[in-house]
Structure formats: C-alpha cells, structure tokens
Image (cartoon, rainbow, N blue to C red):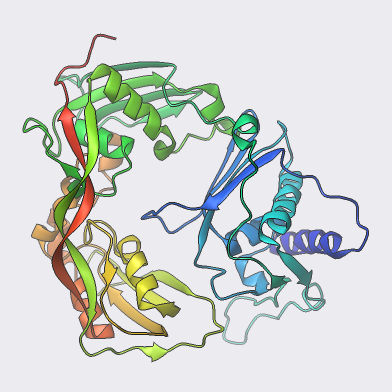
Amino acid sequence: MKLFTLVSGMAMVMVAGSAGAQQKPAFEAADVHTSPRSTELSMRIVLRKGGRYELHNATMLDLIRTAYGVNEENVAGGPNWLEFDRFDVIAKIPSNTSPETSNLMLQCLLADRFGLTVHNDGKSLSKLAPLRKDGGPKVTTPAIVVDHVNRQPTANPPDLKAKLLPLPTAFQVADIKPKDPGAKAYRPMTFSGGHLSAPGLALRYMIMLAWNLSSSEELAEAPKWITSTQPQFDVTAEVPARVLTENDIPVPLQDLAPMFQTMLKDRLKMESHFEDRLVTAYTLVSIKPKLKQANPSARTKCMQKTVPAPGSVVPDRVVTCQNITMAQFAAQLQAIAGTLYLSFPVLDGTNLDGAWDFTFTFSPIPPSPASNANATTAVPDALRVATPVASQAPLARTSLFDALERDLGLKLDAQKRPYPLLVIDHLEEKPRQN
C-alpha cells in the first residue's frame, strides 16, 4: 500500500513537471491564511457536504504530502520553516469530487498562492532500501524535492466572500435543559445524521468551547454559582447540513463553537467581552544553557514521543527540537506541555540568539495535584473518562519545570502580565423556554 501511494504521488509530480501538460483542475474559490494560535500540533482535514474542503493548522510539509499523496519522509529540500509555519486552506469544490482530483486542485493552489515548484527524485521509484540487518523498518529515498516555496501566500481574491459563504453560526433547532437528576452518572455524547445529543455538559465547559478558551484560567468573573462541574445541562440539537461532513463522520466539537455561542446568548442571555487583565504567566529564562548550536539548513521542528516511565502509570514525553530559536520554542511550549502546566502562552526572555538543537523528557501529568487545577474543568460525560485527574498525579515523575532546568538549563519564571480574558457581564441560571 505504501509503495502504491508513493507511485501514485510520483505520477502526480511527473504530470506537474511536464512541459505543456494539460491544465490541472482548480478550486472554485479558496481562502488561504496563516493559522490562528492554537494548542494543537497536528493538521485537521474536513470535507463537508455541499463542496467545502478544509485543511486546518497544516504545515507546508502537510500541504505538500497531502497534495502529492506521499509520506512526509518522502519530501526533501525546501526552506527550514517547512515543518513549522502553519496555514489554513478553506476551499469550494464541486460536490462528489474524488480525492485524486482534490489533490490535484491542492497542487494547483500551492503553485498559484505559494509559488511552489517541485521535481521528483528519479531514484525514488526504483530504489526502495531493503530491510535493515537490525530488523528496522524499510527506508525510502525522497519522492519529491521542493525547489521553491514562498513563506507567505498571495492575498485572497476580493470577491472571496461572495464565492465562499461562511458556515452557519446557529443550530437549526436546539434544546437545552438542566441535567436530569435521575440520569446515569455516565452518558456518552452521540452525533448521528446531524443530530447532536450531549448529556451532562457543564456550563463552564460550554463557555470555554464556545469562545475557544484554551484553559479555565482564561475565564474571568464568572458568576459564583458556576463551578468547574456545575451546573450541568443536557443539550440536543440539529446541526445545519452545510456543516456536516462527508461519509457522516462526526463533526469536530470545535466546529460547533459558534453555534454553542449563539445558543448561550439566546437561551441563557449571556453577555460578555474580552478585557486585558493581569495574570500569572511564564517567561522562559536562561540559567546555564545546555543547548547545541543547530545546522541552519535543517528543518525547524519539535518532535514528540512517549516512553515507558518505570514506577509510573503515566508514560514520559520525550521532546526533540531542532534548528529552533528560543522565541519559536517559547511560542510552542504551551502546545507541547498542555494547559495542565501552562494556562497562558510563554514568552521568551532567554536573550539567547541563534537556533538550537535539544531534547528534554517530562511527565505530561504535573506531579503536584495543586498544579492539576485545569484537569478538574468539567467536560461532557462522554469525554470526562479521558481527562487526567489529580489522583494520578503522585504517580507522575519529572515535571515540565524540572525537566527544562535539568535537561536544558532553562527556567520558567512566573511573572504578572496583561492577557485578554473573557469577562461575563450577564448570565442567567435557567435557560429560556425551548
């Protein structure tokens, strides 16, 4: 299967590089922009009914491997930011477009908006390395070589809004009522045919989802009757058809955020605004740095893997970063560590110039229960089972803070600084009648 994917991708590259080749199909309209800040580190692909193709939080490497149907190890060359900078692509395509055709459309977009040019490595199809003597996996030579790509896409066309309509921001029908006191303690969330059933949703969780808050610390001045787990509501709703995905794959919850926001404003009369408030956040500082000077031609990236941690039920997380500046590392640290450690983005205060290579190992669960405050934020019954709890914390090993100091000679220094928090101006306890 891997060889078939490689051959298919190479066929696309040869078509792309052939002089006079027939014109590739193109998206009817496309919005291309830099991805907003996120605590997610992976690409998300959504193909919606009615002809809407979406790639979210994608690196240029993600875009290239998707467009040409190859694995990431089969893409060589290109600038060092190929695996670091992230982009969103939202495009209009004809209904029932095949995956092969949508890949060709993405190739066309990358060439048009980013000036991407590639060529195929002639050795790729014929030289698949044999199984290593030590029993390791087969290694393939690069299938695609990136010759040129611009770091910034060209501007979106002025008539984009007329061609690419925004998604609906409200449920077709929504029912919200206090959680049934006689219901089971655990009830899964279900999504089928556009019908959402979400029992036991904590109000704080819905607010965080609706306003895209990374942690509960980003919510300020909530009414005293709102706790991390109470009150809870049972929500059922019909999702508009244009939001639904092909093959009836459940719609990601973050895609329903605008609809939850509309529902809370309508049914609970919620009024709010964002306001800069002083928060305790972290700045990365240098103590006795243990960093290796990087090869400037290497790709900028941080890779993660989990390894068993002796004496702990929580595996350790090993992070290896290469050719990364301290400013870039600080900007990614919240996503790497998670909001159990870092409620707010980290700033760089190391005063270390240049780019570096390094590795550090830590437990993704803070060893101190007191550091686990964000883990208690209530989530739907269906998701709560997967949420880390404070009772696991004593079994964790090295904290993020200790790992940075031990392995890298860096320290996270707590400081007060302004940050935009969501302030609730008004919120009713009981929903308006359905």
